[in-house]
Image (tube, rainbow, N blue to C red; front, side, top):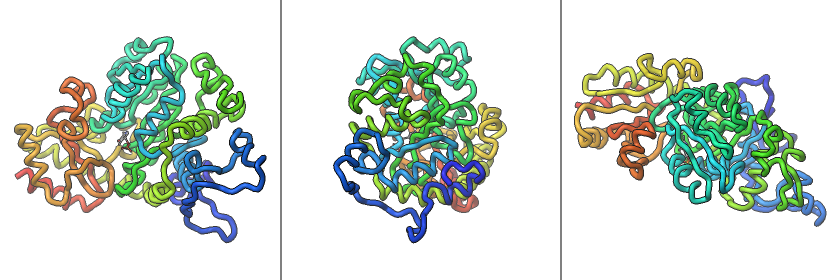
Amino acid sequence: MNNDKNYSLSTLCVQAGWTPTKGQPRVLPIIQSTTFKYDTSEQMARLFDLEDSGYFYSRLQNPTVDAVAAKIAALEGGVAAMLTSSGQAANFYAVFNICEAGDHIVSSSNIYGGTYNLFGVTLKKLGIECTFIDPNSSEEEINAAFRPNTKVLFGETISNPGGEVLDIEKFARVAHANGVPLIVDNTFPTPINCRPFEWGADIVTHSTTKYMDGHAVSIGGAIVDSGNFDWDAHADKFPGLTTPDESYHGLTYTKSFGKGAYITKAVAQLMRDLGSMMSPQNAFLLNLGLETLHLRVPRHCDNAMTVARWLEANPKVKWVNYCSLPSNKYHHLAEKYLPKGSCGVIAFGIEGTREDAIRFMDRLKFIAIVTHVADARTCVLHPASHTHRQLSDKQLMEAGVAPDLIRLSVGIEDVADIIADIEQALS
Ligand SMILES: *Cc1c(COP(=O)(O)O)cnc(C)c1O
C-alpha cells in the first residue's frame, strides 16, 4: 500500500512500507543479515550491473531499511526514498548526488548549524561552493546568487533553531527558473504538518532522529524524491544522471530508471563508495516511531502553542519566537504552509544577561538540558553555547540565532506540568 493515494497519512503511518504475505511476520522484521544468497553466479552479476533489483549487501540496500524508506516516501508523496545513518548524511548525499568539484549551490542561511557547516566548510574542501542567502530576500535577490554552475537551491521548511518558515513556492519558482531542483529539509514539520512536494519542492530530506523517531533512540536520515524534476531537460547541468556511468558499465540513470534515477544513483554510487547506511536495528526503531507520528506531532504542537502563549504573556520573557503565534513574523507563511500546526520547538529569550539564561536552564527540574530536540521529553538548549558554538556572532545572527536564544523543545507530557517547571525556574 506504499503509494496508495486513497489512504490518509494516519493510515500510512501505521501500515505503509511492510505488507506481509501469508505466514510472514505481521510486524516489520529486523533482517540483520549483511548478505543475501543467490543460486547462480549470473544472478549475482546481474545485481551488480543494476540489471536486476534485489538485495546482495546491506551497505547498499537492506529489506528492513527499504520498508521504512518506502513508508517515508508514501508519507511525503514521493516516488522513491532512501535512509541514511544520520540527517547529516542525508543532506550531504542529497546535494553531492548532483554536485561535484567546480559546482556551486545556493542555500538559505537560516538552516541547522550542522548543515551550515557542511555547506560552508566541508563542501568547500570538496570544491563545491555555497552562497548563503537571506530567505526573506526577494526573488530577484535570490536569483542574483545563481551562477552558470549552480546545481541546487536548499532551504529548511522550519529552520532549526530559529523557527523561520520557508516560502517554499517562492524558492521553487527561483530554483526552476534556473533549471535546478529545490531541496527542502522537512525535519521539523514532518509530512504530518507539511508536504513540500505539494508546494513545488523536488527533493525532501529529513533528520529522522527528531520527530520521526520521536523517542531519541536512533540517529537517522532520509532522502525522498518527488520524481518531478526533469533531469534530461537540464542534461548539461546534471551529467551524472544523464550520461553513462562508467562505474556501472555505461548505464545512464535517467534512461534506465526514469523517475527512480536520482535515488538509484545515490544508492548505487554514494552508498557504495561512502557508506552511511542506516542499520536494520535503527530502521526498526524508526518504524516504531513512525507508527505514532500522526498522534505525537499534533500533541507536540498543541503543547507548544499553550507554552508559547504563556511565555508571551510573562513579563520575565523578553521575546518569543514560535511561527504559529499570531504575533509572529512568519505567521502568514505558517498559515499557508503549516495550517495544522508547525512543530514543538519554541525559541525565546528572557530578561537579563546571558548568565541569567544559563541559570534559568540549570534550575529546570524535569525539563532537561540536552543536545537534542523533537522527542517525547521536553528539553532545552542554548545554541550559542552548545550546538552553534563554532559560529561567530555574525554567523549566529545570519543563521537566525540570537546570542540569548533559548531553544525549548516541548514534549508530549502534560502541558500544565511543563509550564509549572518553567515558572518555578523563572522565579
Ligand atoms: C538535527 C538536524 C539535522 C542533522 O541530523 P542528524 O540526524 O543529527 O545528523 C539536519 N537538519 C535539521 C533541520 C536538523 O534538525
